[in-house]
Image (cartoon, rainbow, N blue to C red; front, side):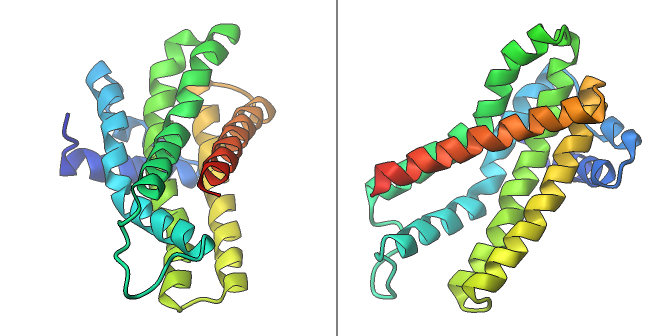
Length: 196
């Protein structure tokens, strides 16, 4: 299933509206069953973030050098790809159970659609500081500061989107966002353990 340029533009605009606390941003998303599956297909848009992640892992492992191709280690390529896929799927899978417990199964599809699109944007935005670091345009502390700032912005967007799609109060929405962050941290830890 291919995501159209129009859907990408609408979904990114909707995510930006949600970041600015505008609930009307939800209307920009395709909330149909087709839109649900296409929101997962949007993972392909994160290919640039995947390439940056591979480069960062190679740098961390001391394997990044100008005379070696970036994609020459099948193990690193596969582990990073699986880590990125797992990060994208973890919260939607856990929230199948979560929305049942909260008696919000009728809101599951909109929640997943919106969060998937926000996660696509998050993966792309969070790769920028690392790209600047790889290019030598940012020092490690500056890249870390940029990462922290982008992380806060992404958390804010996820929090408001969770509130808007599930109709939850702020604290409960924050709990779900925290669950997503925890899952992603565990996946990242496991991914790095597989590469060392």
